[in-house]
Image 1 (tube, rainbow, N blue to C red):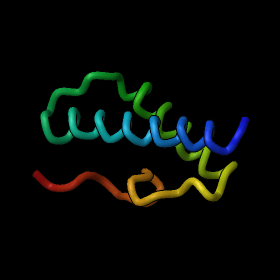
Image 2 (cartoon, rainbow, N blue to C red):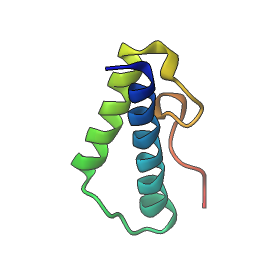
Image 3 (cartoon, rainbow, N blue to C red):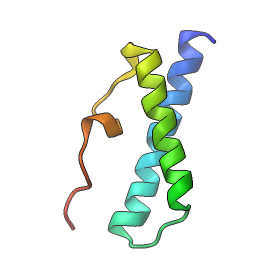
Image 4 (cartoon, one colour):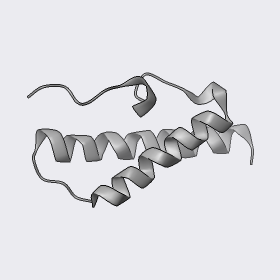
Length: 69
């Protein structure tokens, strides 16, 4: 896989996780199961482990919890 492709997948996963965080924590209305959420998070963490250049401020590896409501 090429670097641009990997970055695109990573950014998409980060965006997806942020969308689900908002639905769960802010709107109190989850749209996916906990397992599916954990799978997305695990994929992000795996990509970061394999491709060190991917980490960004929105990564679950850089955050704890969600902003208070």
